[in-house]
Image 1 (cartoon, helix red, strand yellow):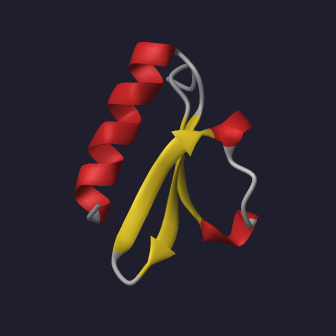
Image 2: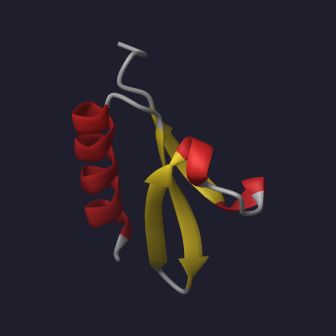
Length: 55
């Protein structure tokens, strides 16, 4: 999915599940969203992290 859609989905998912969610790079202009505890890929691929408790 495009970055702006991934970012919106990540924030919504983080607020719904009340857990840390990350956006990560998966290819040419494509991004994925996952719970931080479920991500087992290269940390260098992480674009951003959404923590619902950070504010």
